[in-house]
Image (cartoon, rainbow, N blue to C red; front, side, top):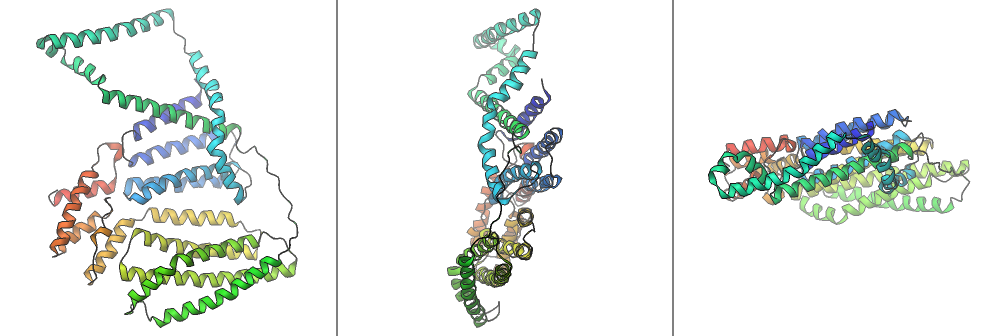
Length: 477
Protein backbone atom coordinates (compact mmCIF):
# COMPACT_ATOMS: atom_id res chain seq x y z
CA UNK A 1 0.00 0.00 0.00
CA UNK A 2 1.53 3.30 -1.05
CA UNK A 3 2.60 5.96 1.43
CA UNK A 4 0.10 8.51 0.13
CA UNK A 5 -2.88 6.23 0.72
CA UNK A 6 -1.73 5.44 4.27
CA UNK A 7 -1.55 9.15 5.15
CA UNK A 8 -4.91 9.81 3.50
CA UNK A 9 -6.49 6.94 5.46
CA UNK A 10 -5.01 8.20 8.74
CA UNK A 11 -6.22 11.78 8.16
CA UNK A 12 -9.70 10.61 7.12
CA UNK A 13 -9.97 8.34 10.17
CA UNK A 14 -8.67 11.11 12.44
CA UNK A 15 -11.29 13.46 10.97
CA UNK A 16 -14.07 10.96 11.77
CA UNK A 17 -12.82 10.46 15.35
CA UNK A 18 -12.57 14.20 16.01
CA UNK A 19 -15.69 15.56 14.32
CA UNK A 20 -18.41 12.93 13.88
CA UNK A 21 -21.16 13.58 16.41
CA UNK A 22 -19.11 16.21 18.28
CA UNK A 23 -19.26 19.98 18.63
CA UNK A 24 -16.20 21.93 17.48
CA UNK A 25 -13.51 22.44 20.09
CA UNK A 26 -9.89 21.39 20.45
CA UNK A 27 -10.65 18.97 17.59
CA UNK A 28 -10.12 21.70 14.97
CA UNK A 29 -6.57 22.40 16.15
CA UNK A 30 -5.78 18.69 16.50
CA UNK A 31 -6.86 18.09 12.90
CA UNK A 32 -5.35 21.17 11.23
CA UNK A 33 -1.81 20.64 12.60
CA UNK A 34 -1.31 17.11 11.10
CA UNK A 35 -3.11 18.23 7.92
CA UNK A 36 -0.64 21.11 7.47
CA UNK A 37 2.30 18.75 8.13
CA UNK A 38 0.90 16.32 5.54
CA UNK A 39 0.45 19.11 2.96
CA UNK A 40 3.98 20.38 3.54
CA UNK A 41 5.33 16.86 3.07
CA UNK A 42 3.38 16.42 -0.18
CA UNK A 43 4.49 19.81 -1.57
CA UNK A 44 8.12 19.31 -0.55
CA UNK A 45 8.40 15.73 -1.82
CA UNK A 46 6.95 16.66 -5.23
CA UNK A 47 9.07 19.83 -5.63
CA UNK A 48 6.00 22.06 -5.66
CA UNK A 49 7.34 24.71 -3.29
CA UNK A 50 8.23 27.72 -5.45
CA UNK A 51 7.67 30.45 -2.84
CA UNK A 52 8.44 29.63 0.80
CA UNK A 53 6.55 32.65 2.13
CA UNK A 54 3.27 31.02 1.03
CA UNK A 55 3.80 28.43 3.80
CA UNK A 56 3.65 31.25 6.35
CA UNK A 57 -0.13 31.17 5.91
CA UNK A 58 -0.05 28.05 8.07
CA UNK A 59 0.48 30.44 11.03
CA UNK A 60 -2.91 32.22 10.72
CA UNK A 61 -4.54 28.85 9.97
CA UNK A 62 -3.27 27.50 13.30
CA UNK A 63 -4.24 30.73 15.09
CA UNK A 64 -7.79 30.58 13.73
CA UNK A 65 -7.98 26.89 14.71
CA UNK A 66 -6.91 27.93 18.21
CA UNK A 67 -10.07 30.06 18.43
CA UNK A 68 -12.17 26.89 18.76
CA UNK A 69 -10.16 25.93 21.84
CA UNK A 70 -10.17 29.33 23.54
CA UNK A 71 -13.48 30.98 22.64
CA UNK A 72 -17.08 30.11 21.86
CA UNK A 73 -18.35 32.93 19.63
CA UNK A 74 -21.10 31.85 17.23
CA UNK A 75 -20.13 34.37 14.53
CA UNK A 76 -16.46 33.41 14.40
CA UNK A 77 -17.21 29.69 14.79
CA UNK A 78 -18.84 29.91 11.35
CA UNK A 79 -16.58 32.55 9.76
CA UNK A 80 -13.33 30.88 10.80
CA UNK A 81 -14.40 27.61 9.23
CA UNK A 82 -14.80 29.38 5.88
CA UNK A 83 -11.68 31.54 6.29
CA UNK A 84 -9.50 28.52 7.18
CA UNK A 85 -10.58 26.82 3.95
CA UNK A 86 -9.83 30.00 1.96
CA UNK A 87 -6.41 30.31 3.62
CA UNK A 88 -5.59 26.68 2.76
CA UNK A 89 -6.35 27.33 -0.91
CA UNK A 90 -4.45 30.62 -0.78
CA UNK A 91 -1.47 28.81 0.74
CA UNK A 92 -1.40 26.45 -2.25
CA UNK A 93 -1.60 29.35 -4.71
CA UNK A 94 1.13 31.47 -3.10
CA UNK A 95 3.42 28.47 -2.48
CA UNK A 96 3.11 26.52 -5.73
CA UNK A 97 3.02 29.34 -8.30
CA UNK A 98 6.32 31.17 -8.97
CA UNK A 99 4.41 34.36 -9.76
CA UNK A 100 0.77 35.28 -9.42
CA UNK A 101 -1.60 38.11 -10.16
CA UNK A 102 -4.44 39.21 -7.95
CA UNK A 103 -7.12 38.47 -10.55
CA UNK A 104 -5.69 34.97 -11.17
CA UNK A 105 -6.29 34.03 -7.52
CA UNK A 106 -10.06 33.97 -8.05
CA UNK A 107 -9.73 31.65 -11.07
CA UNK A 108 -7.47 29.32 -9.07
CA UNK A 109 -10.00 29.22 -6.25
CA UNK A 110 -12.65 28.10 -8.73
CA UNK A 111 -10.34 25.41 -10.13
CA UNK A 112 -9.83 23.90 -6.68
CA UNK A 113 -13.60 23.50 -6.38
CA UNK A 114 -14.18 21.38 -9.51
CA UNK A 115 -10.86 20.17 -10.98
CA UNK A 116 -9.95 17.65 -8.25
CA UNK A 117 -13.09 15.66 -9.16
CA UNK A 118 -11.41 14.79 -12.46
CA UNK A 119 -9.03 12.60 -10.46
CA UNK A 120 -11.60 10.36 -8.74
CA UNK A 121 -11.09 7.49 -11.19
CA UNK A 122 -7.33 7.93 -11.27
CA UNK A 123 -7.10 8.03 -7.46
CA UNK A 124 -9.03 4.76 -7.21
CA UNK A 125 -7.01 3.02 -9.93
CA UNK A 126 -3.57 4.16 -8.79
CA UNK A 127 -4.02 3.56 -5.09
CA UNK A 128 -7.03 1.43 -4.13
CA UNK A 129 -6.70 -1.19 -6.86
CA UNK A 130 -2.95 -1.50 -6.35
CA UNK A 131 -3.46 -1.82 -2.61
CA UNK A 132 -6.13 -4.49 -3.01
CA UNK A 133 -3.94 -6.49 -5.42
CA UNK A 134 -1.11 -6.55 -2.87
CA UNK A 135 -3.42 -8.01 -0.23
CA UNK A 136 -3.23 -11.73 -1.03
CA UNK A 137 -4.56 -14.37 1.36
CA UNK A 138 -3.28 -17.93 1.53
CA UNK A 139 -5.70 -20.83 1.14
CA UNK A 140 -5.65 -21.28 4.93
CA UNK A 141 -6.43 -17.58 5.46
CA UNK A 142 -9.30 -17.66 2.95
CA UNK A 143 -10.73 -20.73 4.66
CA UNK A 144 -10.52 -19.09 8.10
CA UNK A 145 -12.17 -15.88 6.84
CA UNK A 146 -14.98 -17.86 5.20
CA UNK A 147 -15.55 -19.85 8.41
CA UNK A 148 -15.76 -16.70 10.56
CA UNK A 149 -18.23 -15.03 8.20
CA UNK A 150 -20.53 -18.04 8.42
CA UNK A 151 -20.14 -19.00 12.09
CA UNK A 152 -20.28 -15.56 13.79
CA UNK A 153 -23.78 -14.51 12.59
CA UNK A 154 -25.25 -17.96 13.43
CA UNK A 155 -23.68 -18.01 16.90
CA UNK A 156 -24.96 -14.48 17.62
CA UNK A 157 -28.51 -15.40 16.62
CA UNK A 158 -28.46 -18.64 18.71
CA UNK A 159 -27.15 -16.78 21.79
CA UNK A 160 -29.88 -14.14 21.49
CA UNK A 161 -32.62 -16.78 21.14
CA UNK A 162 -31.38 -18.87 24.09
CA UNK A 163 -31.04 -15.77 26.30
CA UNK A 164 -34.72 -15.03 25.68
CA UNK A 165 -35.64 -18.61 26.62
CA UNK A 166 -33.73 -18.86 29.92
CA UNK A 167 -32.80 -16.04 32.40
CA UNK A 168 -29.96 -18.07 33.95
CA UNK A 169 -28.37 -18.60 30.55
CA UNK A 170 -28.73 -14.90 29.81
CA UNK A 171 -26.99 -14.02 33.07
CA UNK A 172 -24.17 -16.47 32.36
CA UNK A 173 -23.39 -14.87 28.96
CA UNK A 174 -24.61 -11.36 29.88
CA UNK A 175 -21.50 -9.50 28.66
CA UNK A 176 -21.48 -11.20 25.26
CA UNK A 177 -25.27 -10.93 24.81
CA UNK A 178 -25.39 -7.24 25.83
CA UNK A 179 -22.61 -6.53 23.32
CA UNK A 180 -24.52 -8.30 20.54
CA UNK A 181 -27.73 -6.42 21.42
CA UNK A 182 -25.92 -3.06 21.37
CA UNK A 183 -24.38 -3.85 17.99
CA UNK A 184 -27.76 -4.56 16.45
CA UNK A 185 -29.41 -1.42 17.87
CA UNK A 186 -30.50 1.12 15.22
CA UNK A 187 -28.56 3.91 16.93
CA UNK A 188 -25.30 1.96 16.75
CA UNK A 189 -25.83 0.97 13.10
CA UNK A 190 -26.84 4.53 12.20
CA UNK A 191 -23.67 5.97 13.77
CA UNK A 192 -21.51 3.24 12.24
CA UNK A 193 -22.88 3.87 8.75
CA UNK A 194 -22.44 7.64 9.26
CA UNK A 195 -18.81 7.20 10.30
CA UNK A 196 -18.10 4.90 7.37
CA UNK A 197 -19.68 7.39 4.96
CA UNK A 198 -17.68 10.30 6.41
CA UNK A 199 -14.47 8.24 6.25
CA UNK A 200 -15.05 7.39 2.57
CA UNK A 201 -15.90 11.00 1.69
CA UNK A 202 -12.86 12.44 3.51
CA UNK A 203 -10.58 9.80 1.98
CA UNK A 204 -11.59 10.83 -1.52
CA UNK A 205 -11.64 14.58 -0.77
CA UNK A 206 -8.11 14.56 0.65
CA UNK A 207 -6.89 12.03 -1.93
CA UNK A 208 -8.19 13.71 -5.11
CA UNK A 209 -7.18 17.18 -3.87
CA UNK A 210 -3.67 15.90 -3.26
CA UNK A 211 -3.48 14.31 -6.71
CA UNK A 212 -4.64 17.54 -8.39
CA UNK A 213 -2.06 19.47 -6.40
CA UNK A 214 0.73 17.06 -7.37
CA UNK A 215 -0.08 16.39 -11.02
CA UNK A 216 -1.88 19.41 -12.41
CA UNK A 217 -1.93 22.53 -10.29
CA UNK A 218 0.75 25.07 -11.08
CA UNK A 219 1.43 23.65 -14.57
CA UNK A 220 -1.03 25.98 -16.29
CA UNK A 221 0.53 28.83 -18.22
CA UNK A 222 -1.13 32.20 -18.36
CA UNK A 223 -0.69 34.50 -21.31
CA UNK A 224 0.85 37.77 -20.23
CA UNK A 225 -0.76 40.65 -22.04
CA UNK A 226 1.48 43.53 -23.01
CA UNK A 227 0.44 46.85 -21.55
CA UNK A 228 -0.64 49.34 -24.16
CA UNK A 229 -1.23 53.06 -23.93
CA UNK A 230 -4.89 53.70 -23.25
CA UNK A 231 -7.11 56.73 -23.38
CA UNK A 232 -7.36 57.84 -19.77
CA UNK A 233 -9.44 60.94 -20.42
CA UNK A 234 -12.65 59.46 -18.99
CA UNK A 235 -10.90 58.26 -15.84
CA UNK A 236 -9.20 61.66 -15.39
CA UNK A 237 -12.52 63.47 -15.59
CA UNK A 238 -14.19 60.95 -13.23
CA UNK A 239 -11.49 61.21 -10.55
CA UNK A 240 -11.35 65.01 -10.82
CA UNK A 241 -15.14 65.43 -10.54
CA UNK A 242 -15.31 62.99 -7.61
CA UNK A 243 -12.54 64.83 -5.79
CA UNK A 244 -14.47 68.11 -6.10
CA UNK A 245 -17.63 66.41 -4.77
CA UNK A 246 -15.73 64.79 -1.89
CA UNK A 247 -14.08 68.11 -1.02
CA UNK A 248 -17.51 69.73 -0.60
CA UNK A 249 -18.85 66.70 1.28
CA UNK A 250 -15.86 66.54 3.66
CA UNK A 251 -16.21 70.24 4.43
CA UNK A 252 -19.86 69.67 5.40
CA UNK A 253 -18.89 66.62 7.47
CA UNK A 254 -16.31 68.56 9.47
CA UNK A 255 -18.72 71.44 10.01
CA UNK A 256 -21.51 69.07 11.11
CA UNK A 257 -19.20 67.30 13.54
CA UNK A 258 -18.14 70.51 15.26
CA UNK A 259 -21.73 71.69 15.42
CA UNK A 260 -22.52 68.70 17.66
CA UNK A 261 -19.63 69.54 19.95
CA UNK A 262 -17.37 67.05 21.72
CA UNK A 263 -17.82 63.30 21.87
CA UNK A 264 -19.38 63.62 25.34
CA UNK A 265 -21.98 66.06 24.03
CA UNK A 266 -25.60 66.33 25.02
CA UNK A 267 -26.74 65.68 21.46
CA UNK A 268 -25.37 62.15 21.10
CA UNK A 269 -28.79 60.61 20.53
CA UNK A 270 -29.61 63.15 17.82
CA UNK A 271 -26.27 62.62 16.14
CA UNK A 272 -26.59 58.84 16.49
CA UNK A 273 -29.84 58.90 14.53
CA UNK A 274 -28.12 61.00 11.88
CA UNK A 275 -25.14 58.62 11.88
CA UNK A 276 -27.25 55.51 11.37
CA UNK A 277 -28.88 56.96 8.26
CA UNK A 278 -25.58 57.55 6.46
CA UNK A 279 -22.91 55.30 7.87
CA UNK A 280 -23.17 52.35 5.46
CA UNK A 281 -23.46 54.70 2.50
CA UNK A 282 -20.13 56.27 3.45
CA UNK A 283 -18.60 52.81 3.87
CA UNK A 284 -19.64 51.85 0.33
CA UNK A 285 -18.36 55.16 -1.08
CA UNK A 286 -14.93 54.62 0.48
CA UNK A 287 -14.74 51.10 -1.04
CA UNK A 288 -15.73 52.48 -4.47
CA UNK A 289 -12.96 55.08 -4.21
CA UNK A 290 -10.37 52.39 -3.51
CA UNK A 291 -11.58 50.42 -6.52
CA UNK A 292 -11.39 53.46 -8.83
CA UNK A 293 -7.83 54.18 -7.70
CA UNK A 294 -6.70 50.60 -8.35
CA UNK A 295 -8.37 50.53 -11.77
CA UNK A 296 -6.86 53.87 -12.80
CA UNK A 297 -3.37 52.50 -12.07
CA UNK A 298 -3.93 49.72 -14.63
CA UNK A 299 -3.87 52.29 -17.43
CA UNK A 300 -0.50 52.81 -19.10
CA UNK A 301 -0.19 56.48 -20.05
CA UNK A 302 2.41 59.11 -20.86
CA UNK A 303 4.36 60.89 -18.11
CA UNK A 304 2.16 63.98 -17.89
CA UNK A 305 -1.05 61.97 -17.50
CA UNK A 306 0.62 59.60 -15.06
CA UNK A 307 1.77 62.48 -12.86
CA UNK A 308 -1.68 64.08 -12.93
CA UNK A 309 -3.43 60.81 -12.06
CA UNK A 310 -1.00 60.12 -9.22
CA UNK A 311 -1.74 63.54 -7.70
CA UNK A 312 -5.51 63.10 -8.14
CA UNK A 313 -5.37 59.60 -6.64
CA UNK A 314 -3.43 60.77 -3.58
CA UNK A 315 -5.93 63.62 -3.14
CA UNK A 316 -8.73 61.06 -3.33
CA UNK A 317 -6.96 58.94 -0.70
CA UNK A 318 -6.80 61.96 1.61
CA UNK A 319 -10.46 62.85 1.07
CA UNK A 320 -11.46 59.21 1.52
CA UNK A 321 -9.59 59.15 4.83
CA UNK A 322 -11.77 62.03 6.02
CA UNK A 323 -14.88 60.10 4.94
CA UNK A 324 -13.68 57.03 6.88
CA UNK A 325 -12.90 59.13 9.98
CA UNK A 326 -16.37 60.68 9.69
CA UNK A 327 -17.89 57.17 9.46
CA UNK A 328 -15.90 56.07 12.50
CA UNK A 329 -17.06 59.06 14.57
CA UNK A 330 -20.66 58.48 13.45
CA UNK A 331 -20.48 54.87 14.62
CA UNK A 332 -18.88 55.94 17.89
CA UNK A 333 -21.72 58.35 18.66
CA UNK A 334 -24.23 55.65 17.75
CA UNK A 335 -22.56 53.19 20.17
CA UNK A 336 -22.44 55.82 22.94
CA UNK A 337 -26.17 56.46 22.50
CA UNK A 338 -27.49 52.93 21.97
CA UNK A 339 -24.84 50.54 23.25
CA UNK A 340 -22.50 48.00 21.71
CA UNK A 341 -23.06 44.86 19.65
CA UNK A 342 -20.76 42.42 17.88
CA UNK A 343 -21.89 43.79 14.49
CA UNK A 344 -21.09 47.39 15.48
CA UNK A 345 -17.68 46.32 16.77
CA UNK A 346 -16.96 44.49 13.48
CA UNK A 347 -17.94 47.64 11.57
CA UNK A 348 -15.27 49.55 13.52
CA UNK A 349 -12.78 46.84 12.57
CA UNK A 350 -13.69 47.20 8.87
CA UNK A 351 -13.06 50.95 9.06
CA UNK A 352 -9.68 50.45 10.76
CA UNK A 353 -8.78 47.88 8.10
CA UNK A 354 -9.66 50.37 5.37
CA UNK A 355 -7.33 52.94 6.93
CA UNK A 356 -4.50 50.40 7.04
CA UNK A 357 -5.12 49.47 3.39
CA UNK A 358 -4.59 53.12 2.45
CA UNK A 359 -0.88 52.83 3.30
CA UNK A 360 0.05 50.23 0.62
CA UNK A 361 -2.37 51.96 -1.77
CA UNK A 362 -0.37 55.21 -1.52
CA UNK A 363 2.85 53.25 -2.05
CA UNK A 364 1.29 51.60 -5.11
CA UNK A 365 0.28 55.01 -6.51
CA UNK A 366 3.84 56.26 -6.16
CA UNK A 367 5.44 53.04 -7.43
CA UNK A 368 3.42 50.84 -9.82
CA UNK A 369 5.81 47.91 -9.24
CA UNK A 370 4.88 47.74 -5.56
CA UNK A 371 3.20 44.39 -4.74
CA UNK A 372 -0.09 45.74 -3.46
CA UNK A 373 -1.92 42.40 -3.56
CA UNK A 374 0.56 40.81 -1.14
CA UNK A 375 0.26 43.81 1.20
CA UNK A 376 -3.53 43.67 1.10
CA UNK A 377 -3.50 39.94 1.90
CA UNK A 378 -1.11 40.41 4.85
CA UNK A 379 -3.12 43.30 6.33
CA UNK A 380 -6.54 41.65 5.94
CA UNK A 381 -5.39 38.29 7.34
CA UNK A 382 -3.53 39.95 10.25
CA UNK A 383 -6.51 42.10 11.24
CA UNK A 384 -8.92 39.16 10.97
CA UNK A 385 -6.70 36.90 13.10
CA UNK A 386 -6.36 39.59 15.76
CA UNK A 387 -10.14 40.08 15.95
CA UNK A 388 -10.76 36.32 15.94
CA UNK A 389 -8.44 35.91 18.94
CA UNK A 390 -10.14 38.68 20.92
CA UNK A 391 -12.97 37.71 23.24
CA UNK A 392 -15.53 39.79 21.32
CA UNK A 393 -18.60 38.75 23.33
CA UNK A 394 -16.81 39.51 26.60
CA UNK A 395 -15.71 42.92 25.28
CA UNK A 396 -19.21 43.86 24.10
CA UNK A 397 -20.81 42.74 27.38
CA UNK A 398 -18.22 44.64 29.45
CA UNK A 399 -18.80 47.88 27.53
CA UNK A 400 -22.59 47.63 27.83
CA UNK A 401 -22.44 46.80 31.54
CA UNK A 402 -20.10 49.74 32.16
CA UNK A 403 -22.70 51.96 30.45
CA UNK A 404 -25.30 50.49 32.82
CA UNK A 405 -23.17 51.25 35.89
CA UNK A 406 -22.82 54.82 34.61
CA UNK A 407 -26.59 55.30 34.48
CA UNK A 408 -27.59 54.12 30.98
CA UNK A 409 -30.27 51.54 30.24
CA UNK A 410 -29.27 47.90 29.78
CA UNK A 411 -31.02 45.54 27.42
CA UNK A 412 -30.07 42.01 28.47
CA UNK A 413 -31.23 40.68 25.09
CA UNK A 414 -28.17 42.31 23.50
CA UNK A 415 -25.94 40.23 25.78
CA UNK A 416 -27.70 36.89 25.34
CA UNK A 417 -25.46 35.33 22.69
CA UNK A 418 -26.08 31.78 24.00
CA UNK A 419 -22.35 31.15 24.10
CA UNK A 420 -20.03 31.09 27.11
CA UNK A 421 -17.50 33.84 26.33
CA UNK A 422 -19.36 36.58 28.22
CA UNK A 423 -20.53 34.43 31.15
CA UNK A 424 -17.84 35.67 33.65
CA UNK A 425 -18.82 39.32 33.22
CA UNK A 426 -22.56 38.46 33.31
CA UNK A 427 -22.08 36.52 36.55
CA UNK A 428 -20.34 39.58 37.98
CA UNK A 429 -23.36 41.70 36.94
CA UNK A 430 -25.71 39.12 38.49
CA UNK A 431 -23.89 39.36 41.83
CA UNK A 432 -23.64 43.17 41.90
CA UNK A 433 -26.95 44.45 40.49
CA UNK A 434 -29.97 45.24 42.68
CA UNK A 435 -32.41 45.09 39.76
CA UNK A 436 -34.63 42.02 40.34
CA UNK A 437 -35.75 41.93 36.69
CA UNK A 438 -32.16 41.72 35.47
CA UNK A 439 -31.39 39.01 38.03
CA UNK A 440 -34.43 36.99 36.94
CA UNK A 441 -33.56 37.34 33.23
CA UNK A 442 -29.92 36.39 33.80
CA UNK A 443 -30.87 33.39 35.95
CA UNK A 444 -33.05 31.96 33.17
CA UNK A 445 -30.37 32.71 30.60
CA UNK A 446 -27.69 30.97 32.69
CA UNK A 447 -29.81 27.80 32.83
CA UNK A 448 -30.08 27.69 29.03
CA UNK A 449 -26.35 28.27 28.57
CA UNK A 450 -25.51 25.61 31.16
CA UNK A 451 -27.65 22.99 29.45
CA UNK A 452 -26.53 23.77 25.89
CA UNK A 453 -22.78 24.11 26.41
CA UNK A 454 -21.80 21.03 28.36
CA UNK A 455 -18.61 19.32 27.17
CA UNK A 456 -19.61 15.76 26.27
CA UNK A 457 -16.24 14.42 25.09
CA UNK A 458 -12.56 15.31 24.98
CA UNK A 459 -12.88 16.24 21.28
CA UNK A 460 -15.24 19.08 22.26
CA UNK A 461 -13.00 20.54 24.97
CA UNK A 462 -13.10 24.35 25.00
CA UNK A 463 -11.62 26.63 27.67
CA UNK A 464 -14.49 29.11 27.47
CA UNK A 465 -17.11 26.38 27.98
CA UNK A 466 -15.10 24.69 30.76
CA UNK A 467 -14.61 27.95 32.68
CA UNK A 468 -18.24 29.04 32.28
CA UNK A 469 -19.68 25.69 33.39
CA UNK A 470 -17.50 25.72 36.53
CA UNK A 471 -18.52 29.30 37.36
CA UNK A 472 -22.23 28.59 36.76
CA UNK A 473 -22.04 25.56 39.05
CA UNK A 474 -20.64 27.78 41.81
CA UNK A 475 -23.77 29.96 41.74
CA UNK A 476 -26.04 26.94 42.04
CA UNK A 477 -26.72 25.77 38.46
